Length: 137
Image (cartoon, rainbow, N blue to C red):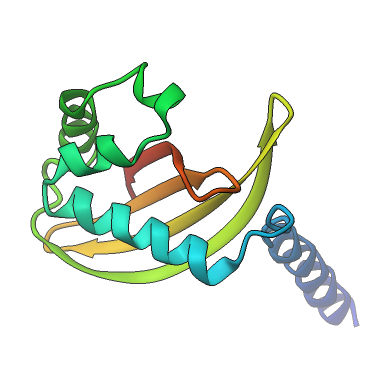
C-alpha cells in the first residue's frame, strides 16, 4: 500500500511537471504553422551558414544592435563542434511577452552528426525575426 501511494505521488508530481511544460498561447492572430515555417527557415539558414540572410530577416530595430558576423559567431560558439546538420527532430511553439510586446517563439531540436542543437527563434506578430538563441543540448 505504501509503495502504491509513493508511485501515485511520483506520478502526480511528474504529471504536474509535464503539464507545466506546455507553451503559452501565441499572440492573437499568430498561427502556429506560419510561426513554425518562419522559424524553420531561419534554422535551415543558420545550419547552412547563410548568416547574411538571417541578419536580413531581423526586424529593423533589432538588426541595428547586431551584424551577420555576430550571428556567425553565435553559431560557431554554440554549435561549432556539433558537426553537419542532419534534421529537425522535434519542434514546438509558445507565446511570450516582454516590455509590453507579445511575440511567438518557435523552438527546434536538431540533430547534427556529432551533437544535438537547440534553436529558439522569436518573431513579432508580423512574423519579423526579433530574437535567436542557439545552444548544444
